[in-house]
Image (tube, rainbow, N blue to C red; front, side):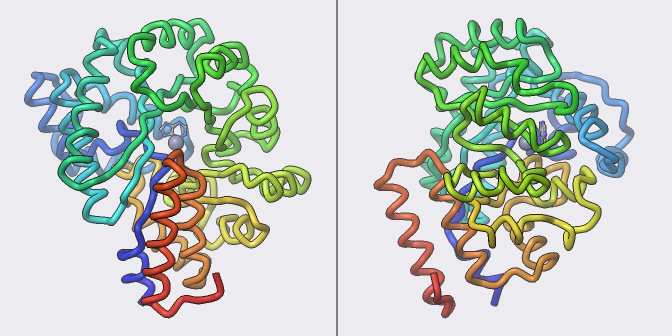
Length: 340
Ligand code: ADE
Ligand code: ZN
């Protein structure tokens, strides 16, 4: 019953790194196509290296694998494969992060990345009616100067970008490092988000709100340590894009039953479910919903609330939000879920 509810609910994804959908099979296929030598003997050998102790141990492999992405066709194939997965899992809207510095640092032009991503997003809309947004992320382990440089490279594409985010190694790279460049991004008229409170402290969530003026917090699970912050997040409904399987695989939580999602939801925060880097963390969006339900014994009403929160937290039009909220409630009703 819960399985089919999760499968049938129209779902929104708001925290998805497109480079994190690079499956080991595609790593090998693209390496062959681009004549790049890999340090792995086989797909299985690569997959067996996906045992992470923390965020950095994952990022090292994630950046290494991204080096097989060279042409617009590569970025197109990567993105279309993810969108096909969305179609299979009834993800109707997705807001996708990409890390241009990972590619421009290797000499791949910004335009090559954009052409591939945008071509696939247009095809996903045409073929499966999946709507999308594209969010450029600055890598926080790099300098503020590098972020400024990236913003300059993005200039010709600003009308096709929907927001700017901040990702990569959190510890020692506080939001305040990027306060000036984020101010410029907001002046340009783009909404901003930031990864905060994944491995870093609740204070980084405060900084993201007060200095970066974010519209959403990516992860944000460390808010659980700070009652005053929880109160503000509940009152303002500033959304958190939470990624349960990522938190488990990166040892942000020891086991799913320790995950704060249920408490955050019950305190009235606008928490949403997302997959982060599904090729690395053992599952796409429905797997994240399933793992939460199993680990935290969530009720069907709570699963429906999480799906509704995704719509609320998204950057869809108000009309689209109304439509998808209604459809979610219709599916809930057919499953006998009330009390919403
Ligand atoms: N880049 C890709 N996934 C990330 C994560 N979970 N945290 C920070 N940076 C990332
Ligand atoms: Zn992330």
